[in-house]
Length: 113
Image (cartoon, rainbow, N blue to C red; front, side, top):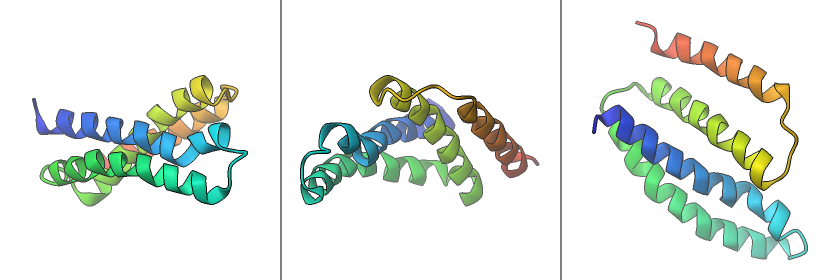
């Protein structure tokens, strides 16, 4: 599998864990003390890092740091929108589309040669 695809796959998995670590406690643990939510989130976040660190190391062999960061942001939005809508039951807004359009501009500038 090409390095770019491995990087994208690992970052996507990382972002799934990240979304749950960062936001699921708002839905599932809102009645618990914040320290409980933080400890559970940290437990989930370790899995995020187990995928994110190798993804960034792989990606950095073929991309600049800026390119890697913009790729991460595109993947983050791509994972976050379904998470927000399907899991957190947030409304699907055009704002997600506009944010994606802005990110496509960032992709253009970071990846142009």
